[in-house]
Image: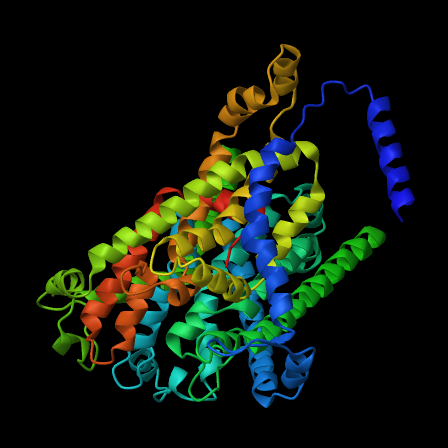
Length: 311
Length: 283
């Protein structure tokens, strides 16, 4: 092992020397401070979490090595599987709804019309607003008796809903808030995609007499597909980790009806102070997120590749 | 004579299209506008108006006292100041560390460093919180603002580094090369040549780091004590007192998020550029 690495190191230095790039300045000093900070606040917590996950430790009690006990406990923890299921439903809904609405919004904002810049600015505001503050106002709007949403529903003849106070409607209600807040992000990503589209295919489609829907379906959609995939990846990572809105509005309730992995993780670590078990949950959660991202990135790579082939 | 005849219906169609699009955009934007209008309305109504059915949008008497009450009864001046200190320090530190790092990584073409930042973005905020909470407890820092300033770096440093890598990759190398031929040290090249060109990128990184740090909630609920709360935590704590009335609560929510919303409207161009480039969000 050592000799091999020395060999490669030697060839690397040899390569570097053989390059006529005598001007190449040393850039490492620029990176070192950030490396130290990232090591301390990002890499150290990763390693420490991994270590804690094989220990049994509740704050205030003795810490003992537990091997894989925490992971075995997790596999048989009904509440964990339930939270996984809630996370799945929440994530799928909170990706699909903003994806659909965000693409629609991008198609509108890509065109020219009066007040376009100003309205786009207004449309972006929710994603920049403080989630806790937003959640608080939505909670008031969801109030079954005094909330404005039930009043608005009554205007169109729909009976009062229980929104976040009912175990069956709580997740869709939270998705509504999440969609309201994050549709603009998809809109911005797709808008970037639309701006990069070439003009020529549309001109020839017009000559061929294609209507607006055909132009969207056969030209725009395939060409913005890579951007849609980026939107899906980013939205999925954010939705699966969603914490502020759920915690501020329901704390996982009623009962555990809206308890996602992140909320259960929070409760385990900071309500029950079960650090070892919470760490194991964090590790599994992290693995799930990375796996999801990898799968989505692979789908994205494949999409691009098949596009290339058909062209 | 022929030209105006053929052109006129076309122009008319185009204006009709534009009005249609404007209408569609207004429909799209309406949930945003209605929400914020309702938020303002809630914050300016007395309890009796907030409990009225059917709901009242514009009350006869504005309850400005709600805002006074928030500041008088809830230590909001202190929490506002805490938020300013935590966000300000975490953002400035991130710029000091992150701008040179973005420059170095872009020039070294070190793609692996970018991967670390991608993974950091995927990691749930809570998994940083458990170890750092224990570390801060052990260092006896809980009860000061330092734990929050340090942990907010988890949010701000990746944003700044990520945006600056992207920015420095697009700035031209020729000037830098010319400067180093003239005998400038790498630091001088960075300081006098690269940095001035990168100003727009730094502004974008600054604004986004500022906003996501200001909005952060999860780190605060674990690490903040009574005197070190930031605004999002303070407003959440108001909510948990059931007896609190809606008016002051909505007023508090508006106070928390207003600085960010104003910044969003004024710096719209930078925010859009930054988010489409990196689509970063921390925590």
